[in-house]
Image (cartoon, rainbow, N blue to C red; front, side):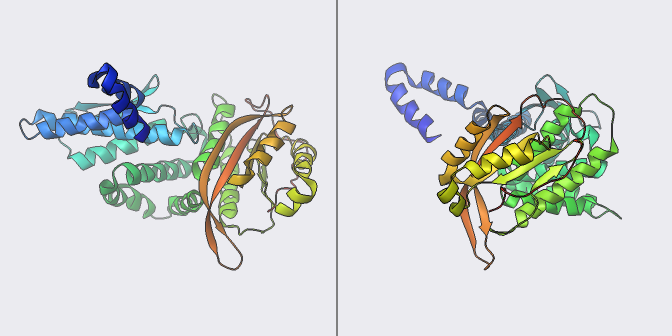
Length: 364
């Protein structure tokens, strides 16, 4: 936004303030809705109808802003736009229309209630639209609750406590509830920066592969073991050994850590290239998540270039992650991620003949 303000000042001198503001609104439509809601909030002191307009534009702007930001990490939302309508009916509802989620909220509900209900309904309707119908009810509910909690924590922290009281705790407190452990696993994975960019990205790939096909209980089982793998990866300490691949009938992915300095110093990137070609390709691994220190990004890009005949770069990302060492030290560090996708892997290929996994070359 700082660049936008600078642009506004420079542009305003020549073409007028109104034109400059129009440019900023065009570049930041989500923020513009939030700003517009403030106007309605001021008017709400003059007449009652303005309060609903304030709720509408505030909710739309904040949800759209959240969708835009996390959507840049992983395209896991069927729609990143939301439109709010108010109804006198007793029931709330949400449905997809094109690339927009239509939320119908009750006029009689208070502001915070409408924001909470709207956020949860948006996530439930839009999150992993293709994949969720193949997950278990427990997995679907845990995902919706967790992502909604993160949305509220970022966009409306004052409403988070009420959401936990009205949605999360009642669900997790049910007899024999299984959502609680999953919720905690997601929290662990997210604390290391891999929930959106790896877990939800992999679910999105899964949904694209199986959408429109028959349901298979193996998908639910593989999702569970994949989440376990990601939790173990999040809890690992620098230098820990372990299997970082998941090879199933539906979910075939690998985590490859590039950054062991003795290897890079003595052999360069060849061991990593050989590992991808000799270990991952024969196992029909479809997605490779290459991770390394931010200052090693050139090495990761070089590995991607060397295997470009087999894998294409789906996305790259920089983020902050928490590294934990065996001596108990914890260090915040920049991490670079390259997501490689096997060419021609958009449809279900069936299980590989030998689902054995190897960990060499993927250790730090």
